[in-house]
Every structure is written in C-alpha cells, then in structure tokens.
Image (cartoon, rainbow, N blue to C red; front, side, top):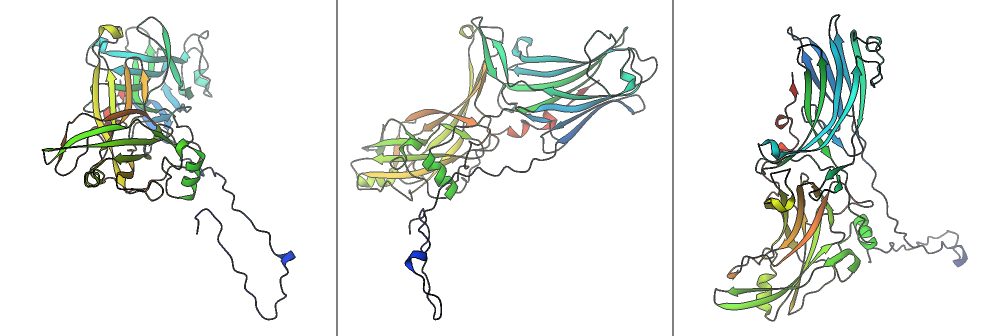
Length: 454
C-alpha cells in the first residue's frame, strides 16, 4: 500500500441489516496533507541569579538580581536575542552615605584576541543611569521613597529591564561603518580568541572614596533560523517517511559539481571514480539537528566501485574555521589573519531506501552529519568570524591510497533555531565518535566568567 494513500475499508454485511444502497454510501475521500506547526514547548520559568556586595560583618548592602534563560542559577546568566535583561537592584543606604550616582553599563561586548591593550576590541558599550544625586539627571523609576530625593536613605529598590540590541555598527578598516548582528558568546580553551559580554553596576561615591562595582559576564545567544525546505521535504518530515533523493526532489537538494577521485589499489594499479555530492537545501542547518547528504559514485570497474562505495569508505566532514587578527587598530591589509580550523562533524552513510537504484557502473549512498547541540552559529563582526564548510575528503578504503587533498568544499551556515514547519528527522543513529570539541564546556560555564565585585 502506498504510504501516502488512505487505508482501504471493507464493508461487512450481516443478516437482518438494512441493505446499503449505492446512493447512501459515503463518498470517497482523499487524505489532505497539511503542514502542521510543531507545538511549542512550555516556557520554563526564568532562573534567578543573585550577586551581592557585603559590609565588613558580611551583611549585604547591595544586591543585584537577574532573571535569565539559564538552566541553573549556578550557570552564567544567559539571554537570547529579543530578550531584555530583567532584574532588580536593591541597596541599603545609611545616613551619611555620600553616594553620588549609580550607573549600569547595559551591555559590554568585546573581542579579545590577546593579552595586549590593542588586542581587546569593544563593539558594544551602552550606559544606563539608574540614580543620580542631581535631580536634572535621568533616573530609573523606583517605588522606594528613599530613592526620590537627592540622597539615598533606607532600603531602595530599582526594577531593571535592559533591552539588548540585535545589531551594532562598527567602523571598518576603510573608514566606513558596517552593521553586524551580535555574535554568540564564544570561549574555548584551545582557540586564542573569545567573545565576551559583561554587565556592571557602578556605585560612585564622592571625595576620595573608590567606586563599588558589581560585574558579571553573561551569555548571549542570537536567534538565527534557516529558510523552510522544499514542500516535499516538509511533508516527508511531517509524515516520518524516507527522505527523497535529488532525482525525486531536485528543489530540496543542491548538487555540487562532479569531481574525479584518483588513487591506487594495492599501491600499484591506478583507479579513478567520479563522485557527485548533494547537500540538502537550504544550505543552513540548525545545531542539534542533522545535515542530510547524498553521494553518487560512478566508474568503469564495478569491483572498484564496490570498494569505494562502502559506507565506511566515503569521508565527508563538517569543517569549522575561526578567523581573527590580533591588532584591533590596524586595517585588514596591514595584519596577518589567524585561523583555527578543525573538523566538527563526520557523515554516516547507508544504502538509500527510495529512488536512485544502483547499476553496474553507478553507486548511491544516503547520509547525514549529526550537528552537535553546542556548535557555535555562523557569525561575523569586525575582525572576527566563524564559518563552516562541508568537505569531501579522499576515500578511505582497504588497499586504496590517494593524495590527501580535499576533493571538494562547499560553504554552509549553522543556525540556532529550527526553520518554520516540521523539524528535520534523523535517519541514522548518532556516530560513535563525538563531534564536540575540547573546551566547549567553558562557553557558558559560570566558572569561566566569574563575577567581579568590590
């Protein structure tokens, strides 16, 4: 039976029943395929993070409470694009406290590429005045009576709701100004560049007394999503059916140019095969999901094709490139770019379940790359960028040898959200080797961004 057609029913007749006339029979029906939107998961209650300044006896006199999307209060406060930094500032002021002003630096975003002063580039720095001794300066509204005059007195509370801009304008090397989307927080042990965000509360005092500061890093996650795939693929995802190949769903695939794979069998006999790789459209994929692939291998020798088309012989990698330079004040032509390149995913392969039958001189394999949930999304800002490529590597087969250079490379993007419509299905079990990278546990770990208070 066709999986897309309705089930067949047989009308039973029993003695004594009223005969069913043809005119009274139910009309035939056809199954309508409507694309259902996934039911959104219930939103988790915000997590509260508490930061305090204490007096000599250990009694807190300043308390900053932030409500974020982090999974635990022990984790770094985490905010998503379009979310405000919501919270509350509480301060206990005694008579004689000479507090001049309270200022919150809304967002401080920096690219840190070294230990020198020129190796830190601030792309975001916005200041929000909370309270000032001068009545002419703007203030955040407070329900506390002690915060309404020119001196703070008693228990004072200020509710905070700080918007996070989606993009910033950064000067380019040529003197122009370019708009960039805010990048995700980035910190890895083996990569010599990081993206860090901070929030600071500064309590300024008069005279020779130093300022009091509460400072904490926070994680930021942009909201990026792919365009919807082809209608046929959406139906397949919704109905949990086998994925159609490039010949059945040409709109759902990008077929790359064919490449020749040349090598030697048993180190002496030259062999050659023609390899065509297809990637699912659009070429943007959500982290935590899959990147579908399809490969066609053609050749004149069936025995060689059998060796090269073994699922363990075809090597397709997802490769990440982090690119930056150290001197933030130099133009791009004056500096030497640093690159950190590593493979963050490997395709697994199997025989297709649908179209594209093999013949004596052609082999087909269906596959997918499982994308780790902690992959950093594609981004670019000033002199920092994260980009991804799908790379077709030389075959790795028994008794086969070849040049180690990649056969083909195609740029793709990694997003943080799913496309609208049905979510992609995974058709193969996860690969045994983890695609996570060393140091990823640092990216949103509160221990790596310890709050600074004084």
